[in-house]
Length: 158
Length: 417
Image 1 (cartoon, rainbow over the protein chains, first blue to last red):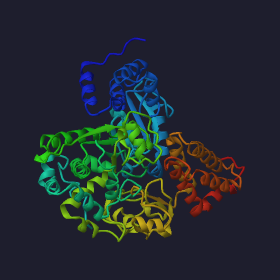
Image 2: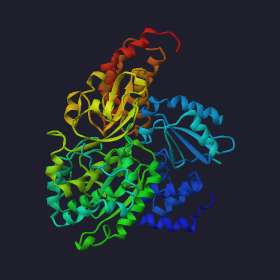
Image 3: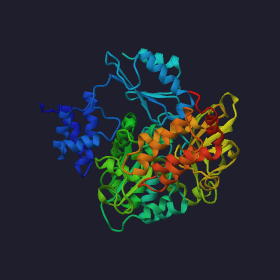
Image 4: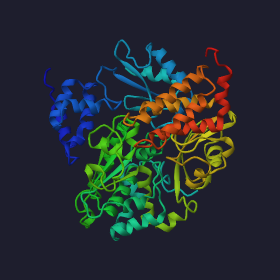
């Protein structure tokens, strides 16, 4: 296993993250997020590097990582589509719209497109219930979805 | 209707220090710093403010429970908003971040806290930039940092992002997550006021709760207490979603009839369908049938009607829906989010899901409803945190009020679905 190297910018960010907390283990989630934002996944090498930085074992890092749904250890698409299917969205037709989205991307829910551009996931409530049905693509929320609007959104991403 | 939190919510630029201060922001600090910390705690107690996150615990009382003379103490703002149906805090964070900061400064001064964290759900990554920017502005103005406004009081506040786990909205799970661990709930007691973050006395309050505090300091506890009902004081943000024409977050005075929220503020039922059911306080509270729609929206009246005010998320369901379908979706959510620590919850949520799924596949047997009730009885109050009870609520209430929806499926037993 090769050694994971943080970039210079990342080192700066790590320093400012560590400064927030009296105990450095608190920086675990922020560091995992930092790595994933750069690499799209958290690799075993990165887990070792983060563990070293925070004085915890790689196994501990992995046990925490596996608890949270937002971390990925396997390759995902450039655009992560999280489609809310919880109650307010369900009442407003999200099941059909999710089916439509999967068909449009020609994948099943949970899969990544062949060109590694899109990954589609079912998601629990994203706290935008008044805009239901909604989805989140990377960091952007899209509400009041219809089939046409979904097509437009997907087509506009490159 | 009196607006406290949403008074200026749609003013252009409200998220900036300049506009916020022009509208009277941060005025409460001077007033507060002229008083002793205990006086602020007493005022919050007198105001009757109760926690707006879901449990409704009196805020001033919570603050007064902090272990005496143990320092450092911490403040954690719970911005993990993830109760299905709830999206009020997101609107506050997005449009009025300084109001939260002002509230957190007041709370910290009252409780002699020098470090505060805003725990935001991971999906709020974008909002954390808005919050960080606002915190930076507050530091530049000297509202945060060392020796704030010459009082000798020090405070800094940081944002902290979760990474996708509903359970982290439970306060002790939130603390574990903030310490860099798996978000599993802790055994209570000790309560966070005694042993919280890093085993130190900790105040944990919801975004909306903290946002009310500047009003109490500015206008006085009496004025706040004069709003609402005798026991449910003040105003409440309610997220109205589901089958309504104008879904949205609305600020109402406690005690406003639920029908006013549905038919007036939210514009009534879509397609002019008929109301079938509503869930008044987020997916974790029991649902009510349409004939309870005039129930006043406050803690006591909703409790008397057999449900709870919860986080203030009113989910409206019209008569085009079979309630069993809605119930299955909610069970599926809790099954997914159960952290797996307590057996009744880990196994119970799964069993409920399997049974209701079989009913919907026309494979049910007549004793399935009794089985569901039996499992629910073995989940309630048998776990570290209330997630199991939250899963039980829609099941028990849907059987109580909409048994006929279950029976629909029994008519077709054996018919493939």
